[in-house]
Length: 247
Image (cartoon, rainbow, N blue to C red; front, top):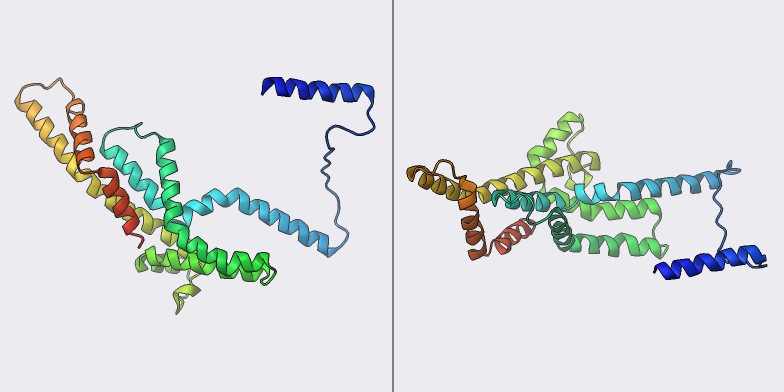
């Protein structure tokens, strides 16, 4: 790779010095000028909106999908095992992303069939495509959101409760969905902590009865936690319980 870059640089310098008629690399120009008609202003606003959406894409993926519950539960699992760096953060995030793709595949497939493909074929305009794409996503979030959380944000926003779930505005549904997912994830995390807490208590009581007060109980309980987690096939149970909660 280094040799290739050096040869490329040499060719460019040679072409510059000998004055080739055809440039080796294309010239790129970016400029900002005043718009002369409303159509140019509309195109500029569309580009600005697209760049804004791309910048917010990670937050949109996190806040409107199953990623919240999955990543929090996986983090609780690692903390319950008292292993702060195993599995690494990259593994936790990667597994959470792939599990999110698995859970959201039916919803995203519906969005692709009903909104994206008709939009690319020119059958729907941008506004119609967006409204059609939001419906499956709102349906998914509504199924996972508690009615109490929705009522909370309707009251805080002084919004009249819609008659149909599809009429709930996004600025109400998304925060209600987020806090519902966090509550569910914390409930699962509490259940994960119980067996490992029992092991810690047994080990601490045993060491205290033996007079070994200077020995940290974590050093003794950690192998037992790992053994228990492996024997019951812990990752299978955790992933199964999390995925089943979305079905």
